[in-house]
Length: 283
Ligand code: GUN
Image (tube, rainbow, N blue to C red; front, top):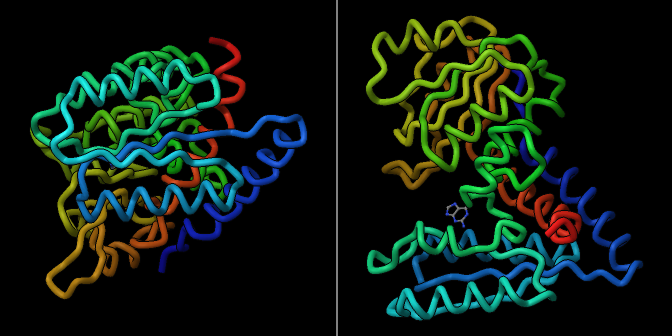
């Protein structure tokens, strides 16, 4: 039976560290402020946004909520982003995705000032990560690195396989593992001989977006398996991209769903908000 990688415990530690840093900033007269923009009332987005606001409250970051109507025009949303870019009291800007179909998501992401891009989605942030400059890193892959490091799992020199090549998880994940001196392979829907590749992995990060896709036959005995997926099954229970029950018998360490990667995303957003004070100064 694999060691369980405890996202709940590690995310709580990280939020505690952020809380201490935010308090030190307040003593210097700096109140960190995050603008949280939601368009429409998608229930899943509302849950995520509420979790982010709650975490801000705990850590001591002021959150400024902007709840816009589903039918807001792209121009109005871009005008709000521009106002927040110019507002020196705002350190970070988060526009919850997905946006309604009439709004071009990329235009909105590109409009956020790179100095306030706490989601790490702006091309500047992505470029900075890929050439090793300091900057904001997308929260979910940053959370995976923290799970590995704080569980004492060595990355340097290891065969790391990332399943999935999305802009938000797979691509930045591969860059982060490379930055930690892992030997990185990225697989995707067109990859041939998939299991031959995943069975080489010492560390397997799964972000394929398919419930229980990865079964024990994808895994090398003793591998570290990180499950980025989250799905609700027919019984309304949460499950990941990994078939936890079979894989846990073969893996050396594994993240549960829930209580693994998911809880880390908000904790890393808090870290990015703390980092925003220094990054704002560089602007
Ligand atoms: N929608 C799902 N995940 C995220 C995230 O990390 N950031 C934003 N802005 N929207 C999301």
